[in-house]
Length: 545
Image 1 (spheres, helix red, strand yellow):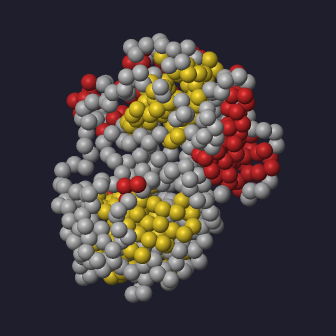
Image 2: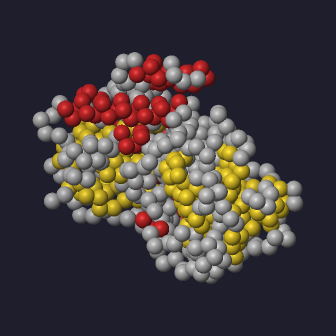
Image 3: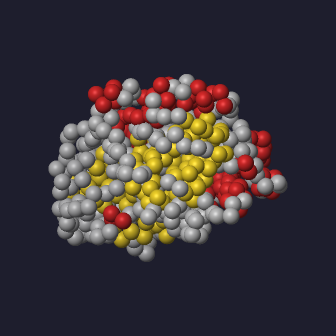
């Protein structure tokens, strides 16, 4: 997380249409029938391709439209639905880009979870509401605004005779929605089996409706309808614990990226054990605390778990204020990029944008002017390929085109300029790996800036997809203790796919490990949560032949 960050979340393909969210409207549940998805009023065919929560939507191909927008439905275009034994999945598209965590209003998913109008309550009126609602999921909740009426985060609310109840954590139904940057299509999942206090399992059939309530008070919706589950509910634990770490392919190099959460890295015993558990060859860290030095890093990499893997060499940024970036490798030489030891903004860039933002946001730019960029670069040879590794940590919080989002874009542009200068010093252009906490919860531009045209052949860098070991999602950040923001994909690894092939990768949390296996690694299921709110992201790369 970067400075002044109270809002976090989290990220689709390289091509994302960026626009201004005008009048957002909504989604409803589908027509009647049996099966995982239906076209309104039609009979469904059970879903055969498991849904991966990744924000790419390839796995939705062939899933028929579940609900189609009408002329009076506002800017929502279409909706789809699917299921498996544990989750109910929804996807919806809109005509203009928006972030699901920060809209000019609130998107309510109203759910009659027992298919009985006699229970629950009525939300809104007959034209746009739904009777018998038991639970509502609010995206861009209205009680936590970020300015200009833009909401912040997500929440669940039980519903009774008097309507919507108090806000409760969406983690209580294990809700996840991706991507978290602004785009025109989203997917989300909801636990079918219920979980904590007062959330019963979804019934054999549910009625549901998505309703958008704009900041100006305009309420729009698509028709409500029934959804009937074809797959029996799985009552066993949803997390499938693992008893082995995936091995890397022959000749592959394991690149590990992790936001170590600044303050907690001052007591890094868990950090060392968790990193050692995935057997990294190259490590990129962000949010190392302000006093990071040669001695503190030498002590860290001398910890028994890491020292047992080999001899570590490292480089770290001299800029970034209280959040430094680190590159380390074992049993290889490393050379810090001389032009990237201290990464700074081009002269006057922060001042020019600072003058355009509200007075309340100007302190953000003043702090940044002192800290400068949390990034560096270091050269490591990978199977004969000179590769520049660039860790980073971008500004967190905000929403599409607000000051925090603008600062993220400025940071990515400045980092791009710095690494281009470094690459320009060489007669042969080197390969690139850029990884860190992108915090892209507004526009996609900060990511694309560090992808576009930076591969050795002039093409875009590839984005590595690393599924969490225990589930089909790309979540890299989670904070159930606070619970305001849904789990998200904040941490990304970009790499030169003209030079390297990706042979594997995963996102790692000790919570995904079987207890006996965790104990054999010297960790507990809680070790990751205690170390950082970000998870370890692993990418295995091998030179192309």
